[in-house]
Image (tube, rainbow, N blue to C red; front, top):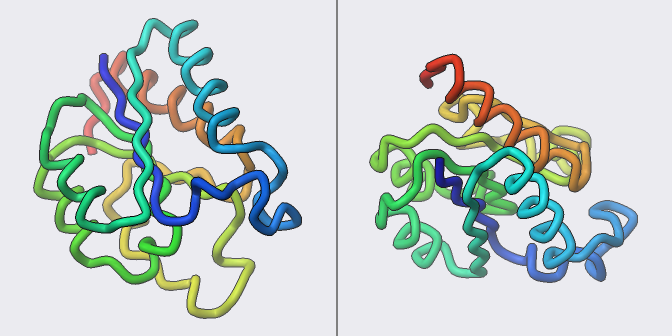
Length: 146
């Protein structure tokens, strides 16, 4: 199984950006944790981060993965185009957020991905990515669909 971990805008600054919200673990450290956990599960992962919406959409369009873990960051609240791309590629995805957007500013209560994700892990810090990977493997082993 091949899993794409898709990271949205500003996540390259995790670890230094607002550590009181996002924690002090860097994105590289999070990706290393994901790769280590994936190896223990026998899953191949690719991580991809971009600050550009179109780059994220183009990456999804390659369709060279079986499932995805998506932290769309601020695009969660604004991007119908990213939602459409996730639906168009017809691959299950799990939504992850380091913080819980619903407990923050009111505008973050809008979520264009939640109703089309197979699961969501929010407010769990980096651990959310590992739980998302576990969920994908569990669904694959039980034949779980969207």
